[in-house]
Length: 164
Length: 60
Image 1 (spheres, chains in turn cyan, green):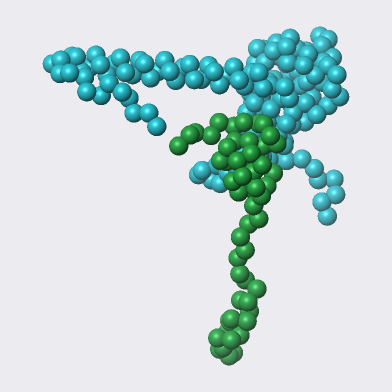
Image 2 (cartoon, one colour):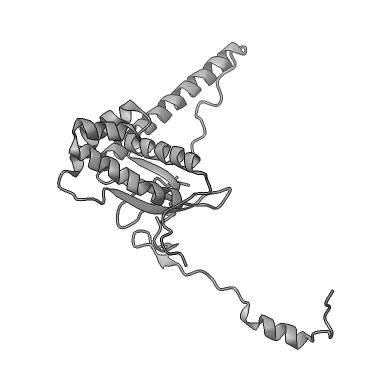
């Protein structure tokens, strides 16, 4: 009988599991969307939602309670100053878990967990990533050209870096 | 140690294995790109789930 057995152990002892969950929740508060395994996502969900509830309370005691779980002061600040305000009219259910497939290597089932309404943040991140990739590509091209010049100035042949 | 008393015939072996066949997993159709995908999961071909939830799928 599995009466009164709830929750996830995740193959860890208590302190290891606690540290893992605090790490996951802190990352989720900062990034708003993270990819992890399905059991980890499900195990952290209550904590992720509890943090929003604390943020909505907004008083000093709630702030200290959140700081006792989250690992960085920046996460506490974000939680209380912008994140929780999004959920003013919502009574729970602040997160979404979407299964995304299986990890190459150990075939673990992966999922995204995110705070609802994080689409704008994700879009911004995507644009920033594209920008950085662009910058890296230009830098690599410039470096290749300079190297070609340094190596006795033969005409640069590989002008175009391979694009898929 | 206990040992088998009699050899099993081919028929006995094959009859036992009659129910051991593997079946293909059931797949659903992605409403966005109409590829076959696992149900309740993001489509690995177009990155859609429930008409949005775009996960970037590298273009090949």
